[in-house]
Length: 154
Image (cartoon, rainbow, N blue to C red; front, side, top):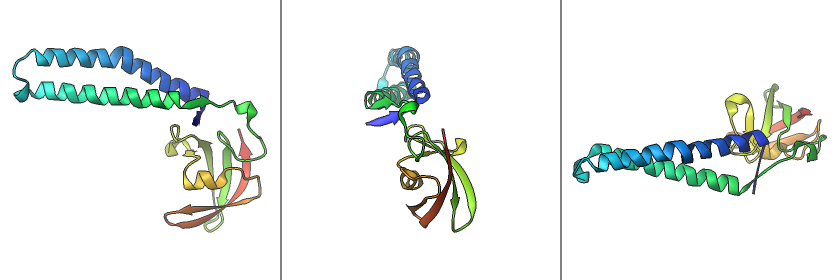
């Protein structure tokens, strides 16, 4: 079971709807047109259309599974005194004294450029459940990071 913000759930649902109602019919028609052009074994357009059709079907199935196995999280039901999903956490890396701020999100919402890290990432997992002032230890490929939580917001 994955938990998503309402915004991300709606984005995935909109993408799925677009793929089903717009993209897939276009691809299906393209396959039919290129198929009618003759010998399929030497028809590069047909092979490309079939590849695009397979990619579209694969993406549709993936998004359907994501939505089937996801629930929208109610931000009001989350604890406000500790790090949890949808928390914005400011912390200090104690070895470098560098402050960072990230929002803890589900893996489907992760976007480092937007300051969103997955709760399943080493840092996200280490921060989960911690309170302001506590130190989290994150096991990363480059070693153990000691992180002091400075603030939590929503």
